[in-house]
Image 1 (tube, rainbow, N blue to C red):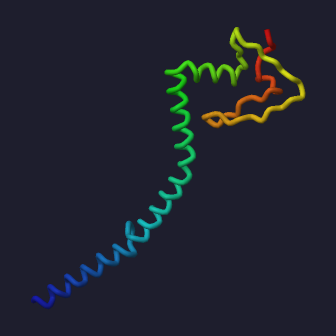
Image 2 (image 1 turned 120 degrees about the vertical axis):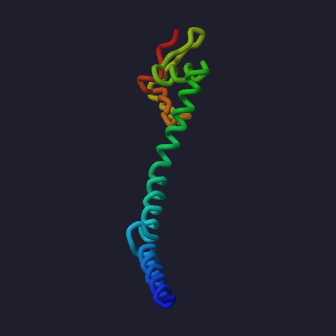
Length: 117
């Protein structure tokens, strides 16, 4: 009787080991899923970084006037009333990269600003 119980438990252990290593939801499938998760994380990292930059820009625009002024100058070429803007044709200034990755307009671009007062 004890001999049959030991054989039955040994067969049950072998069946469970087979399912663990080779069956559905086993170690092999777990390894494949972890590799896919790592690949998706690598694909999503640039998107997460971009979202963080955009969230920081939104906070800056909501709280600070400096960010609004900078955006108005770079996007639509606004100039303060106490400033003069001079556009020199043929002179090109390299575009610098802003905090969000949007290049600021160059001096020769149409968005660079208005005529001087």
